[in-house]
Length: 75
Image (cartoon, rainbow, N blue to C red):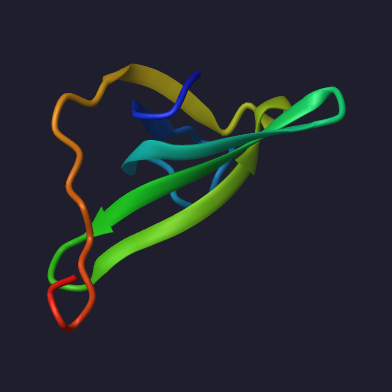
């Protein structure tokens, strides 16, 4: 998996069934840690960390449009 991939959390995770976008990946020794952004309607984005070795996410596809979050000032 790579940054901007669309993933779904599997039954191994409490966010089972939720779709998200990989926003960051970090190599940690022999494993890879993914930060997955899950959009929450009218609240923003929840960022969830998971390790590749835990098999908690499944690749769905590639995100074409990536929303950029802004702060209260619109920056």
